[in-house]
Image 1 (cartoon, one colour):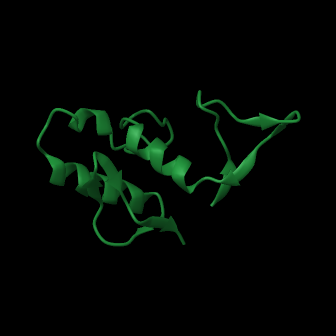
Image 2 (tube, one colour):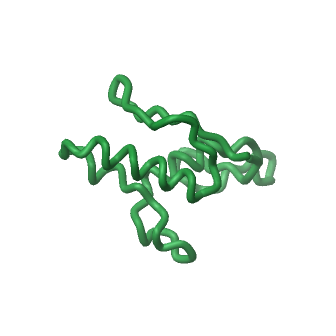
Length: 95
């Protein structure tokens, strides 16, 4: 999916005085993972809040929530998300 890109501070990225556009799939996935429900005024149920799972053993709950949020955002999730080397791995893309 093409969209406006954000910089490392989550501000709109600019180049030569113009906004930067590009493939935003990974950016959208990161935003979904790190957002808390209620962060997005127009869509208050969006957000996995991955930080809330850090000190829990509810891995299946986390992975279920990731799949649900990605699908609700319009992505096709192939297989179940998994954790590898401490990172969430999801095979998902917008169709």
